[in-house]
Structures are given as structure tokens and as C-alpha cells.
Length: 89
Image (cartoon, rainbow, N blue to C red; front, side):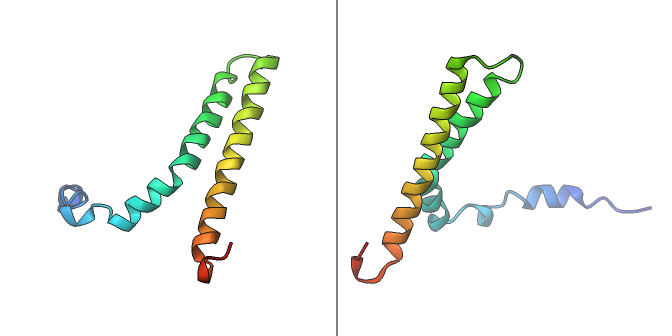
């Protein structure tokens, strides 16, 4: 008979030492505009799954795609500016 060890794994999976660090939380906060823009883009795509997209739907998708790309560019620019020595951009 095999012992069941999955209960111990489930208990230790949410131990206190498994909490995100401050650096991880800061990274999530920096990436939040990108995350929200991606959610908006997914929402625009999801609304058109069960029907033929109208012109308004297509505009919404294009607008959401542009926002997602702009958020990614802004994140990359902030990251690049922070990594350059001397504060040069």
C-alpha cells in the first residue's frame, strides 16, 4: 500500500515563506499597466467569440491592441532608462 503524501504538499504549498517578496510585488506593480491592457484586449476578443465582429468590435480590438503595445513600449522604456548608468536615456 502506498502512503498518501499529497496532503503534506498541499499544506506546505501555502506556507508563510512562500509569500512574494517585495521585489516581486514591485515588479508586478510596474507591469500592471501591461497586464490591464492585455486584459482589455482579451475582453475585446472574448466579446466576439460567439458572433461575427461588427465594425465597432473591430475598432475596439484595434484600440485595445494599440493600448497593449503602448503599455509594453512604455514599460520597456522605463526599464531601459532605469538600467542606463548616469541617468541618461
